Length: 283
Ligand code: AMP
Image 1 (cartoon, helix red, strand yellow):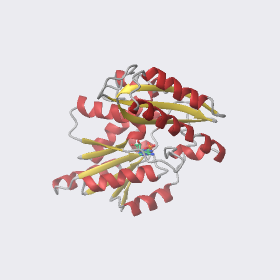
Image 2 (spheres, protein in one colour; image 1 turned 90 degrees about the vertical axis):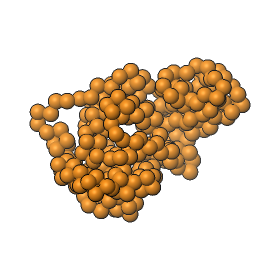
Image 3 (cartoon, protein in one colour; image 1 turned 180 degrees about the vertical axis):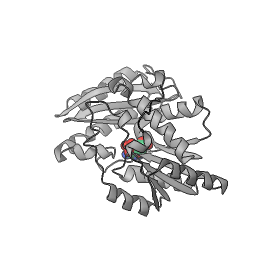
């Protein structure tokens, strides 16, 4: 595995790979690699000949009160994990090479980015969209693997690829969970062991909703309210939002229509840690 830090070098390697007719798969992360990230690498290996993993904690997508400076950065451990997962190129640029002095361009997302996470984290998706687009241009992938864990991010990236005519296939990856159902996340290290146990209520809520929809309940607001109660009545946990969206447009859905797919989105605090999770359901 080769470690690259300079965008220009990564770009010229990607260019050569393309000239040699190599199919490039990219997995973009902020590091602190875990089973979720490694499942994306596995998917990339299945759908492309060369796998590039990027590690970049993108300051542009963090709000002033967020955890940019304390975000975990176990680089040596990440290198070892990436290597054993079969990554070919690890691209880990410095902030100054991605945003040099006098950098000034930001991608402005539309309506899709204004709801849910976008409402809670102003500017987050514009920052994410900017760096993802830059990393697309640097790594020149044919396939890009993104986790369903960040369902709204995935929807926005699909929108960017369509809107900007990017010749990239976006491949979604299912959510990897811990034994108690908690979605694996780099931020789970902020949870105490007690909070980690409590946090499994998010998954219980998702399963409850799935069961209710399978039982043909059509009132999505009522089901979301039941899940909200489950979480809010768990000590130390409180919901930020619990909403169904239709899978296609990512817009708030109130009543289920037979055969349609929906996604239940949850954002909730366990202690001081904000967690997100979701599940796709079919009515
Ligand atoms: P992050 O490093 O948190 O920015 O995540 C990088 C990529 O890994 C994103 O596409 C995430 O959606 C994906 N990811 C994070 N956690 C999980 C998980 N538990 N299961 C599947 N994919 C994940």
